Image 1 (cartoon, rainbow, N blue to C red):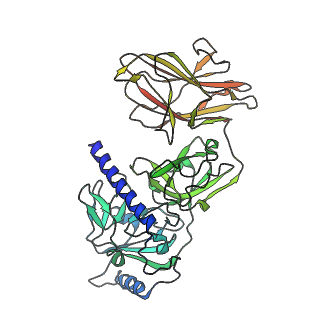
Image 2 (tube, rainbow, N blue to C red):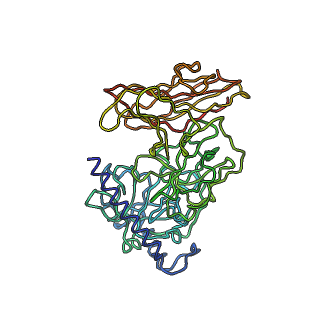
Length: 461
């Protein structure tokens, strides 16, 4: 069943790419004229339609419309289903996202308040360059009868308003160009949105679609010189964001059609990044999606850890020591995000016994009084549990005979490829000298787990 769902999503993603390519060749818009600036006033026809609907709100007549909150409208959604709304209801919100830079496409989010939002909705429509009409902060009303509520990717929990139901997989399809004038209205009000300030560890699904500001963050120094979007990616690129005040990471995702795709990531400072909390296309993970790179403000001094490894350039400075077995730790593209280090004793249809160590280069702790190690793991299949060690006197040989190693207590992934934080591990015993961290993988000839490691970090305390 999962393979069927995956194939459906691949098909839809391919169709989406073809549509975007067509738009990139011949740019068209559903705006009523060729003025691509944000409007200062509304046309008479648009005013009349909105005023007519508002006059029917709570007017005491038989044809009155109930103005619902976004929270109330979200309550109409049925999990894993797309349903047609039949009630005479309308909802109001403020546009939080913008497609001006090409990082969103034929969609926008609305939130229920410009300064203190509590709920959001996604709107999908057959209209490109929506920022010309539904600019960020614009007060928007949606007349809901005959529209559809559900998800554009069934199971991703992003509650969406659209125009039709995809009978193939029960997803919400975009409002058509003919539906938009009768259901989607902007008022003359544009508010200045105040982003919700969050630490990385505070982000939850409740922030989906909200304009937020991630504070005290920076891009890993290992990304220096790289652009926002990897030129080898077809659809989206993921770039990690790290917290300065806590051992947390998050992911920024950018479209390959964004006009800032070739701009170099600002890795020379720390600061804040504002944008929209969204989901990856497969619906599994939360990500940050930029409206504009103007919302990336790195005006502080970097807070680099003593050591950090995101494996984006593999692990050429590490010691990859194989005690026994033909397999070794190798680069893998399924990191969190990007690349990671991976190890398995399974190859060519069989399992062989292995003992393989992946050991950091010397981490200089000569000028600190303490330190904390954090990392992330993902694993699957059954087999021996990976072990983690520290040493202060390793010199590059067989770790069973070279150096004194102390086993560390860490939280590791227990399966299903779930990325798991290790927790903060005290490595202060290495203060005043060098620290080596060793990841020891073992398996037998009958069972072999697969382990992946990413985002290894040592922070001074």
